[in-house]
Length: 143
Image (cartoon, rainbow, N blue to C red):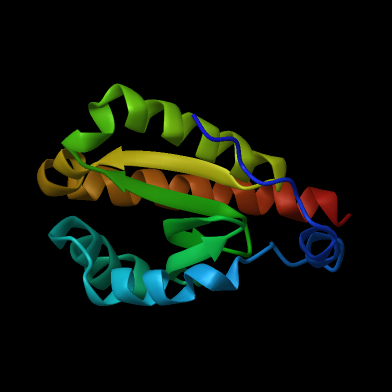
């Protein structure tokens, strides 16, 4: 298992300035992913997140990773997982990725594609509750 690169001075200065680090070398990949979303990502984006009152972005680069959806105002990343995430190496990579994102104060929530397909309203309610909860925490930090 390859370890993640260490945080460079440029990355640290971006975080210091209030921005999350972005590996611009993977910008083309994130653009391709935006153009080729899964049906579950399309549904969540077009039927909920796109018009949500708090801004979300699709296929957002954070450090060395691309998250499915990201809300910068509350630092919430949403990942949609298919069955391939049950494979042992994917599970390990998901844990490493989540720990990396948590280092920057990003909360990561994962939903199975099957949840989006079968319980869409519950997924939307869960996201809404998380955004509201995280908004309260952000407000407390600035008081």
